[in-house]
Length: 235
Image 1: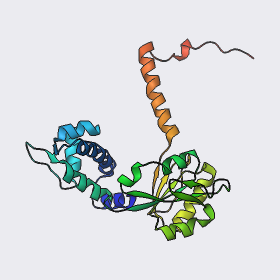
Image 2 (image 1 turned 30 degrees about the vertical axis):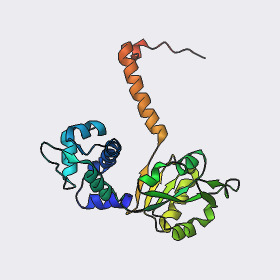
Image 3 (image 1 turned 135 degrees about the horizontal axis):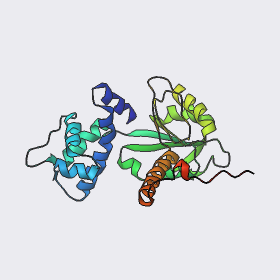
Image 4 (image 1 turned 30 degrees about the horizontal axis):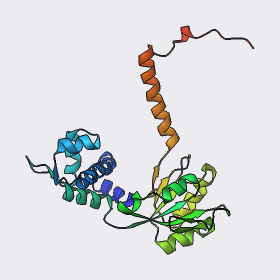
């Protein structure tokens, strides 16, 4: 999928548009499950959490303009977006790091329905290697390159400790993988041409905490100003 996103950018589709396509697809899949055949741009925009003008502009990059008075054909739009995102083919994924997060990802049932197949699980812990998880045996990290080649892995998910992530990423890139999803709490350095997406749950929680604090400040009259702080206490 990440390779297809790069191709989309090369064809002139803005990166911000590419980032919103999965939101539209998720909303459309929900509508299809409810039996809706068509949807207006306004209703789809509300379901995806964007404004309708932005949605129409995004979809115009795919050559989809809808029909005045009718809207968009739900199934066809699902196909268009899925094709653009590369979800009309099977992508083999390897998860490196089979701790609590790695196990949760391995057991997530939504991958298959979205075009992703977890093809390998790898870890460095002898106590974990050999475990049977989600239909797969955990293999030793020493086998990383061979597993990537043998299973045709296109995307690697890193769920390793921060200290190990860069070394594993270097090996993954050297093995020919150019798409990495990084859950490790560290910024990775990769060569040009390698696409990496970082998911940092702690940062997302901190952003939410910021907004919660702002709401609390508005309710209580704002944070204490410097002159309101208590005098320093000598210890």
